Length: 56
Image (cartoon, rainbow, N blue to C red; front, side):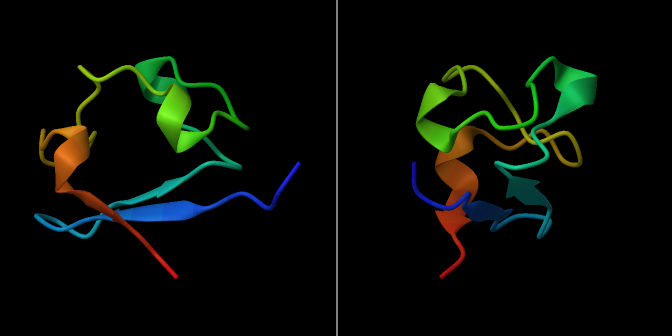
């Protein structure tokens, strides 16, 4: 399996790290970005998944 990726919210700069997940929102560590439900929102500002960009 490939390395874990990180995604940044363009609204508040919160980082979603696939390796860490978002346990407070029920997203387990190791959860890939594409496996997060479409109704998930940024835990910092409430932005949708569409507001996140891949950190290269």
